[in-house]
Length: 267
Ligand code: PEP
Image (cartoon, rainbow, N blue to C red; front, side, top):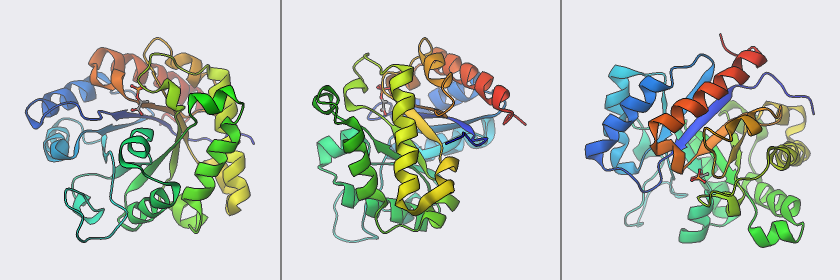
C-alpha cells in the first residue's frame, strides 16, 4: 500500500514519572526545544499532571497536544480510582489505549481495549491504539498473527469511518523492546507497520487504512529514530523513557522534522 501524505507524530509517554510540581517545567522545556515545522507533538503525562501541563502549554506552546495514558471502558460507575472519557474533557485531546504495560499490569483484554476506543471516540479524543508481540511470539515467528489478533479484537464492531474521522493512530510496540534498550530494527518495524495497515484494510477499512498513522515504539532515542523514520510506512514514534529527557526529545523531533519536510507535510 502506497503511503499517503500522513502527518509525522511524536508522542511522549511519561508513564508513572513526574509529579505535578515538576511536570509543568518539563513540558515547557520540551515544547520549547521541539518547535519543528510539520511534526505533531503530543505529551502524555500522568492523570494528576494533565491540568498543570495543559496550563503550562496553553501559554507557552498550545500546538503541543496533551494526551491521557489510559481511559476506562465504562461511561461511569463503581470503578474506584478509574478515569472516564468524560472526565478528560478540557484536560486532554489524545489518549493512549491498550499500552502493553496496561495489558500486563491491569489485565486489559482486546475486547476491553475495543470498548475504550469507543469511549475515546465518543468523547472526541484522538486514540493511539498500541499493539505488539511478546519476545516468545517473535522467537516463534508469530508476531504477525499476534498483532492481527490484537487489531481484530480491538477494532471489532467499530465503524471504520468513525475511527478514521477520530484520527485513529496505531502504535506498533513490540513488548520486548519497551524500556529494554533493545529496539526493533527499522526494517522489522516497517514490515509490521505494513502488516498493521493490511490487517486493518481487511477489516472493512479498505483504502482508508492507508490514512492511519502507524508509529513505532520501543526504546526509541535520538540515536536510533532515523532508522525508523527512514521507512515510509512509519509515521513517527511513541517514546517512553527518552521522552523525559529534553535533549532526547529535541533530537527525535528534529529528525521527525526532516521526514515531514521530505513528505511535504510541513506547511
Ligand atoms: C512506551 O512507553 O510506549 C515506550 C515505547 O517506552 P520506551 O520508549 O521506554 O521503550
